[in-house]
Image (cartoon, rainbow, N blue to C red; front, side, top):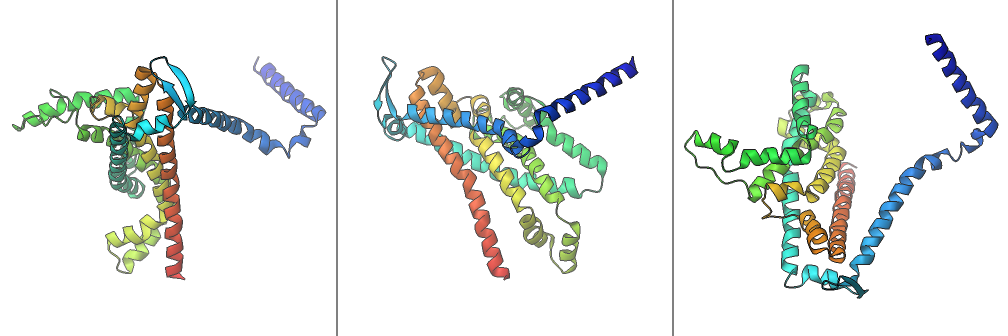
Length: 314
């Protein structure tokens, strides 16, 4: 039976090859790169159509009583900045950006040394243990992870019980910006470490030893050797983590108890509760434009840094 299966498999392969020769597929070799990129181009085209539709909706007025589309207008964008609702939307946008930058900054401070430790530690067991701990947050869903933090930070949760052992009253972290910050940090730090790992692995340890031999302190080695050589990984991880934090939805809704919503939460409420696709589209496009600028800014700064570095070394 086994030989029959193998023989059938070879006959099938021969049939495929013969069919390809009859169809003269070798003539399509020049077009093969375009054929392979066609699915990605189709996906991007669909996303572009969706973004165009968002833009089309955002430049129309909307009758909230009759639920009818009005003429072309800047009404939706004016509602985002003008009283009485403008202050609320601007505060939400500011809160989202400030919290995202703070979480990303602390994640870089904690995640990059963790990645360096994983790469440079001589103990294989310790390396595997730290990597497993880094991967644990990604082995569960966003909702499960968020509710786990809810049980920890709740008034009668694990944190309150632990503080009670030392006679400290529960700090009431749940429902505060700090609670949201802690929940977001748990995911961002491992993500930064995992994204920076390849960049640090490419750094030759002999460069650090040479710098130490010449009298450089560990701080100067980090500043002048490790960080410049790992700069591409640092930029990529910063952009990825920052964008994920800006789009955060569950942490503000659950750990913040809805008191400190992010832009994603407000857009969701606009679509589902207000059923105002036009205002939601305008707010979505504003967030998209800001996110796009934040993606381009680090790469522009890196180019300026390398230009400045080359001018100093030339």
